[in-house]
Length: 104
Ligand SMILES: [Mg+2]
Image (cartoon, rainbow, N blue to C red; front, side, top):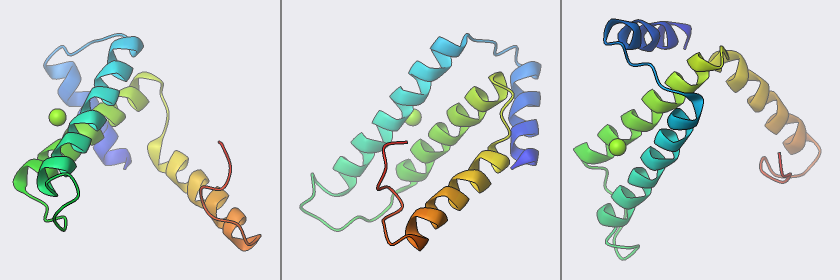
């Protein structure tokens, strides 16, 4: 993940892609919405089984890029963040709950 964050950071520096945190958050939410739209198209609004298309991969890539740019702007190590959240979910599951049983 560190390699991915460094690659995106270098890309943004090379192409002078500097935006505010607020812009980056809006972009991230927008890209998640595009994934939702793609899922609705792929499944014909839930009438068909999901069959990922090339657009599905592309939209998920957009989300990942936006997420990495946001994390870089905040100087957050996504690998550490992921490890921490997996540990949190594991503790919840060990207690007999579900991974998403709390609000945080
Ligand atoms: Mg997109």
